[in-house]
Image (tube, rainbow over all chains, first blue to last red; front, side, top):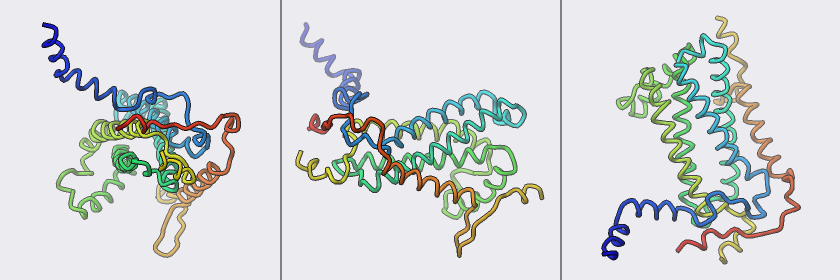
Length: 212
Length: 59
């Protein structure tokens, strides 16, 4: 009786998902408390700075969502939260671009890290879409001008039939649901891959890495 | 008209046109990038060299 029950557990999707999640990163690497010596450099700080900014972006965005799209026009608190949202986005992109420069010049796709690099690129592109839709839902003359200019650009690349940047409601829903979910999922994939393969060593350590 | 007057200063260089604010932000990011490469990281000299080999756990 025990053998069939054991087989059933092995075949269940629950155990399959559990095994898959447990094997995503090597044991002890999900939240490591030690890193290689070469990580003791300021250039390795900007990835986690990007993640920290993303947490503030999402947190301030949630508060803004509770107040509504026009809250920041009529409330001092709303204006403050809106400014926190804006400047955390500015920090998010600045940190992400410096992170990108650092990883590009250290050829961070080395050592079977190609997918890590690609998820970073996709995350960057998705973040641009999220920020762009944010500019479209300010409900002021700035957003009106940006959407008017963007409409021509979007139509010129042939995707204007799929969405309308002049549709504030559509862009607001994309901004608060679709794109944040997309950025979040890709960012999680990126971090898992970093933890799975480890932080890329400096170029002068490449010979050592190839040897192991 | 007031909005147009407060639109900020722009730098024009051939076909390139960029606001002074954006230009200064990009310069600042480059400076931060350069400083990140040369400034010593606090406590870096106290750590013992070690290697992190998570890939070895994979087949």
